[in-house]
Amino acid sequence: MSILLSVLFSMGIVSSEGNLDFSKIKGSVGGPDQYGYIWIDNDTTGIPGIPEYNWIDITPYGTEVQGLGDDNVVGPFPIGFQFPYYWYKVDRFWVCSNGLISFSSNQMWSPHQGGSQIPSPTLPNDLLVVLGGDLNFNLGRGKVYYWSNGQDTLIVSFIDVPEWHFGTDTLGSHTFQLILDRNDSTITFQYGPQRGKFNYGHPAAPPAFGIGIENITGQIGLQYLKDDTLSPNMFHEGLAIRFYPPETTTYQVTDLTMYEISPNNQGFFLIQNEGYIPYAIIKNSGNLPVSSYQAFCRIRRLPQGTIVYNDTVQMGSINPGEFDTVYFDGWTPSIAGKYEIIEWVKTAGDQVPINDTLHADVPVVQRSNYVILDFINDTTQANFTHWMGSGGGWGMRFVPPDTCEVIEVRVMLAAMSQAGMAYIYLYDDDGPGGLPGTILYQTSYYVSSSTPMWYTLNTQNYLYKEGALWVGYIQGGVEGPDFAVDVAPPYSRNTYEYTGAWAPYRDPFTDGCIRMVVNLMISAEEKAHEKNMDKPRIYNNMDGKIVLYLPKAKSKKIKIFDATGRVEVPEKIKWEGEKAILNLDKSKKGIYFIKTESGKFKIVYVK
Image 1: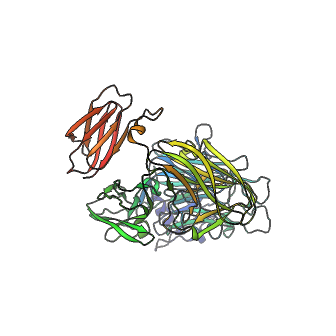
Image 2: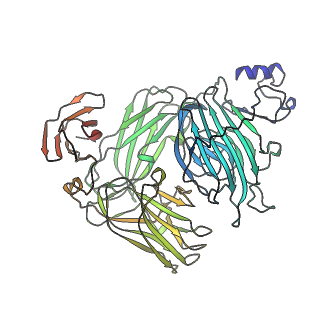
Image 3: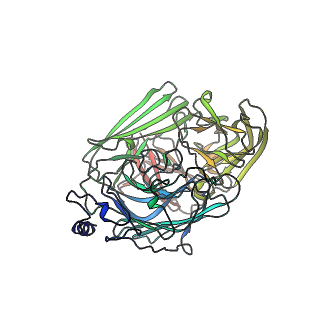
C-alpha cells in the first residue's frame, strides 16, 4: 500500500498534504477515512491498484448458510484465521439477510429510515455492507455460501437473492460476494448479475440501499454508495471494489471491551439460596497494550434498584487482541425476584466507552413444584405488535436453571388490530445453530378479544434435561392477533422473530411476553437416573462438596487439576454406585477440572 501511495504521489494524484486529487483520476477512488482505508473500483483508470473482476464460484464446495429469511441474522461462522480490520483482528462473522456481514453483532441491519448511511454509530456496527438492501430469502430462491482455506482467504457469496416488495411475485435478483485476503489485508466486493432497484416494486418509491465498510464503533468507515445519491458508483455486473488499509497508521486506540458476562450475553435464571459466580471476559480491542485495568460487577434487585452485590477486581496487563477472564466473588441470592447484573471495565484513556459495559437480566426463582420462568419486568408497559402478513411470529429462548418438568407455556395475545388464528409451539433446540427445531407440543386458538390474555399450551410435564427450549407464536391473520412485548428494562436478548427463519428480534430493547411454568422439585437422585441419560454431570452445592455422576463408567479413577494444571487431592472421595462425592478444600475457590474415564469437565466452586 505504501508503494501504491508513492506512485500516486509521483503521478501528481496525491497532493503534498497527502490528499487525493480526484480531478486527475478517471473513475472513482474514495477515502481515506480517519484510520486510513481507501477504496478503488475497476471503473477507475489511470492509477495503479485497480482491482480486476474475477468472480470465484464457491457453490460446489462452500458451506451453505442455513436459516436466512426476510430481515434476519444468522451466525457466527468462523473466518478460519485472524483477519486485521482497522486496529483490531476479527475471527468470526454473522450473515445478515440484507446483504452484509458483521464481525461482532447479531443485530439486524436495515436500509430504511437512514440505515443506509455508512458509517453510523447506530447498531449494528463492525460491518462489511456488500449490497445492503431489503433482500428476501423467503421467496423460494436465493442462497449464501462461505468458504475459507483456513489460512488467508475467506469468501462469502450471495447468489440470486430477490428483493422484498409489495405483493407476492418475485422481484429482482442480486448476486455478489466479498473476499478477505490476509496476505495484504484487503477487502474486495464483486458483483455478478443484477436486476432490481430496491424500490419495493413501486417505480415512484425512493430506493434504499448502501455499500461500504465501518468499524466497531460505527464512527469510522467508507461509503461507496448510498441509495442513488452517488449514481456514478452504481453497482452493476462486473463491478469490483477493493478496500485498502494503510500500510502504517498513526491512529492509536486504547480500547478495552466487556466482551461477555453470560453465554451470548443473554439473560438467565438462578435459584434462590444456590450460589453463582459472576464472571467477565475482557478483550483488548485497541492497538495499544494496557498496563492495568479494573473490572467491576454490581447486582441490583428490581424494581427498587437496591444494590445487593458489589465487587471490583484489579487486573494486570493485556495486549492488543488478547482476552482475559475475570472471576468475581461468589453471590448467593437469598430473595427470589428480578435482578440485573451490570459489569463494566475501566482503564485510563479508554477511547471507546460504548463497549465498556454489559447488562444481564437475571430472574431468581424458588426451587418449588410450580415456578414461573419469564423475563417480563412490567406487563403494564407492554406494547402490542403484529406482522404485515400471516406466517410471521415471535419466540423466546428458555434455559431452565436445573432439570425440571415443563408444565405449560403461556403467550400474551390480543386482537388489537385483527382477530385471527394463533399457533403456539414448544420446540427443542435441535434446529440449525441451536435454534428452534423439533416441535414437541403445539396448540392453536382463535383470538377475537381485544383484551390482553394469556393463551396456554399444556406441555404434559415434559422432562427438560439440558440445552434450551423454545416457545414460539406464529401469527395466523394478515394483521393479527397482536403479540405483547415488554419494553421495561433490563432486557434479556432472548426474544426472537420468525420471518421464514428464526433470528434475534430486531428490537433488542424489548422482551416477549412469554412464560414457562416448571416443576424444579426433581431430586438429584432422579436427575442422575433419568431415562436414557448417559452423559456425566456435576452438581455443586458451593460448599466444597462436589457430586459427580458417571453413568456407564468402567473405572473409578478421578484426577482433579486447578487452572494451572496442578493436581489437587480431594480430602475424601465416597462412591455410591455411579455417584462420586468429592470433598474439596473449602478455603480455595476458582476453576478446577475433573478428569475421568468419561471425559474432562470444568467446575467452579467457592468457599
